View 1 (cartoon, one colour):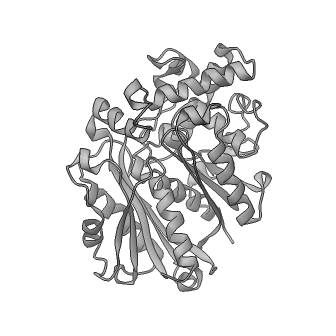
View 2 (cartoon, rainbow, N blue to C red):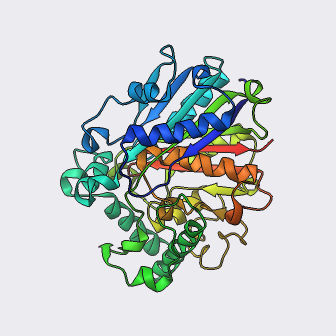
Length: 389
């Protein structure tokens, strides 16, 4: 395998946008291309992530139009990816392997979504299409319900009083909103308190409104290239060290939602490929679609023993002064969650962290970063490990 680098990154502000999917992606894509030192004509393929286009805009076949908006050559195939919330992370993994294998030298990867524009009812319904349609969706199960069950299971399995777990979950939200307040591209840029979380409306017991990430509009993109192609073009390329992806079946087959087995499988592969372990990760952008999800993730990675990571945010171990900085961007919780764009937005944050470009939210001395994106109800997990040299 050839060495694979990320040459440029770009993303729009996440939140509520009046722009179309293609307009947002063009903004993010051009920023990534400009930062990479290459030209649109140099890009040999586009791997494009979008999940909800048919419902948002009545536009399913969007990838070739995105390529055209950016001025990519006709010879560059444009392919749409869909893996629920892990869409653009999965697209990135495919691009990195194809560049490493010598099929392409330079690929543009990213995604775009107008989830906020759909409104809560339709967005909730379409997000739930990432669940199993025979047993789960007909029962009325949505993602807040899945993670609410996970929280109850976690409290019971590890004999943690539910009120204590809820307070620790609230601290996850407080941390990530603080981080988002430092991020000019975050959906939410305002700090909150534990009381804000605990006094918010109930969504799916025990998850309250501020335990849940928002629906967001936005786009993100990265330029993936064979390392030698960009060494003279960019001052600080970031390298792909290891990747993993795994799949799981319906929830009734998974049974214990406190152990995300697909994530454990994926991260093991990524660690082995990168030749690192949990102790080597300096900064992590993980899939905190709900506050309990961050707790489950840090245990899956081996940052904490199972049942021992629930109070990490409460005691300050996952903040900027802690032992393992989690979601310095604000995460999905505050940065936002335009699902087709989320993965490459996480990658963008880690790239900027490893380059030392994040200003007030910079993680000091960060050399190795981890990206974690979850698709559906634990159905797809994808992990990317990046290094600065």
